[in-house]
Amino acid sequence: MKSILLASIGLYIILFFSSCACVPLRKYHDKRLTKYINRNLPAIHTLSDSLLVLADNKNCEYKHWYDTLKSPQLKKTMFALGYETSVYYSKQQYPYDDCNAVPCDSVIIFKQMSILLGVREVIYDFSVNPKSYPEFLHYWNYHSFKKATSNVYIRRRPIPMM
Image 1 (tube, helix red, strand yellow):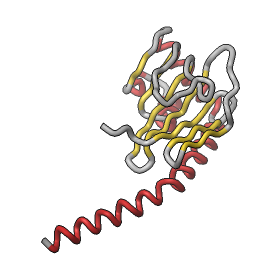
Image 2 (image 1 turned 60 degrees about the vertical axis):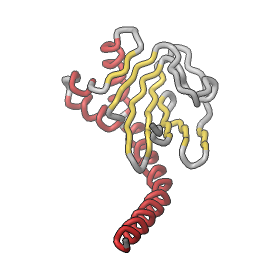
Image 3 (image 1 turned 180 degrees about the vertical axis):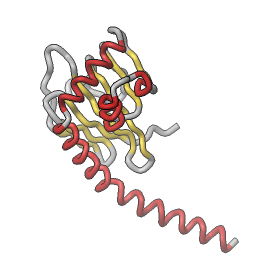
């Protein structure tokens, strides 16, 4: 009984410290990713063009487009942006999205999940008539939306509960 109590106290302490460390860690990773995006913008445009050709003018969600790319440079860029890729020509369906605040259609979303950091999405807006969106939106400590460059945005949200 004593060992179960000590184990549960230890687990609570670990969860408390890990939850406190998440916010600065998220900010650090977002800043690092923004620098990467700004340095490698031509490679991101090339990768996005390749993914648009693969999508063939329809909404697609692929988890393994990484395997279909031949160029090592494109694979490296995709690996840095996210493991899952979605292309949306029409409005994507997220309940928390307001189309005036974040890009909803004509976007490529690179998604990556982490237990401590939540879901990170890099949104590349390829619309012909781009709209202007806020530079930064912050919802509590869990949701954020930030502009990285003129048509690339970073969105963070918690891992969806099942």
